Amino acid sequence: MHTAEIGLIRSHFADVVSTPDRRDRFARTFYTSFFARLPQCRSLFPAGMDGQRVRFVAALEYIVRGLDDTDRLLAFLAQLGRDHRKYGVQGNHYAAAANALLDAIRDVDSDVPWNRAADSAWRKFIALITTTMSDAADSDDFPALWEATVVSHERVLRDLAVIRLECDSPVPYAPGQYVSVQIPQRPQMWRYLSPAIPTNPFGQLEFHVRRVSGGWVSPAMVNQTSIGDRWRISSPLGGLHVDTDTGRDVLMIAGGTGLAPLRAQVMDMAHRGINPRVHLFVSGVYPCDLYDIETLWHLSLSNPWLTVVPVSEEDENPWWHPYPVPEPPHGMHQRLRGPIGAVVSQFGSWADRQVQICGSPSMVKTTAYALQRAGTPVESISYDPLR
Ligand SMILES: Cc1cc2nc3c(=O)[nH]c(=O)nc-3n(C[C@H](O)[C@H](O)[C@H](O)COP(=O)(O)OP(=O)(O)OC[C@H]3O[C@@H](n4cnc5c(N)ncnc54)[C@H](O)[C@@H]3O)c2cc1C
Image (cartoon, rainbow, N blue to C red; front, side, top):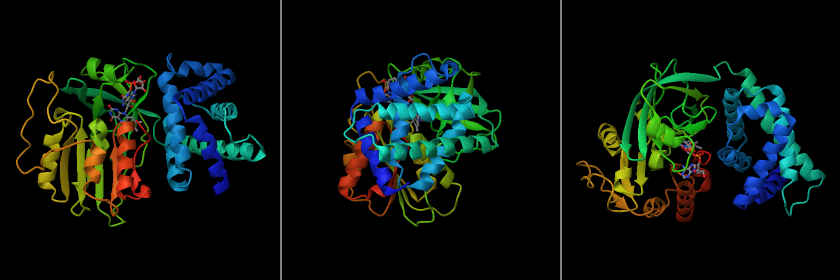
């Protein structure tokens, strides 16, 4: 797409995402129009559509932001197309979605006039999305989804579980990617989770799941999962990775379960002899939120290129946590205190690093902002679509 068209789409879309009400209205118009065109598709979606609408706008926001980087964008759209096969999406669904998207964007109250240029730019943009997605879905040889059995469920914090599964056949994800997951307790409600270990021939998977209060799915994953449950896993998505060609060292910043895709990459790198230097900052609100520090410490002991720095906003655990704050393992970096963005940026600009940030949307946004203010170029910073 031309620069002028990209600019037009971005200004228009900035109005869509400017307030929560506008985001919601845009998504509602999209789904109303889509279901009016294909009523039979309503049953493919959950009864409560709130989360679906939030995720829809977040994905579109990610696509609009990535419009300058064509290769990355096309790769993401192709992944999305392969992933959408889990819903049973067919060719005619894409045409209906394209028209519904056009209806939704035309409905936006914007200062950008809806003229011939806007109409043409949006049609081009929407065609790019739908054709890339449907072409990738049609040409993929892998199954639309994999079945897996829960083999272990460990409650490492009151609101956080480490869940391990064995897939009937290995899911071909790259370390750093995420997958969508459906559990038997919540049919039709797919949620993204990031494997915390690299893929292996035995089909073993490990997820770290934080219970979001009031959420539909994560409380069921943390509270109700049993050994033997059968989960469904869909095609891998995302492109977080360490670029070994650039010769640049790496800065990784994890908040909470955002550690998972970073740890998978570090574990994968541990199989290789030569690696760039990696600084991994692991953060949480309380010291107890650094639930995986023991594993990271062991990894850093046997991999001299890896430095792990624990960070917490508070110095003490909350009163309801059953254990006192433990001493850091001998030889490990002392735990630092403060908001993660402020802590990391106080070390300097990190301008020569490739940077990955992973955590909650607010943690990713504030940390990326703090780094940019300290001098990290925005193009060096990577993160997943916001969680
Ligand atoms: C790329 C990606 C990777 C992810 N990887 C992981 C992972 O490895 N482990 C993991 O635990 N989660 C991960 N998530 C988040 C996960 O997919 C779900 O969004 C989360 O578990 C909430 O689902 P839910 O059904 O419980 O909440 P929903 O029913 O979807 O949402 C309920 C309410 O909670 C709010 N909400 C949703 N998510 C959050 C949040 N994270 N923090 C605060 N409020 C929230 C919603 O806005 C809504 O108001 C990832 C998300 C993305 C996009």
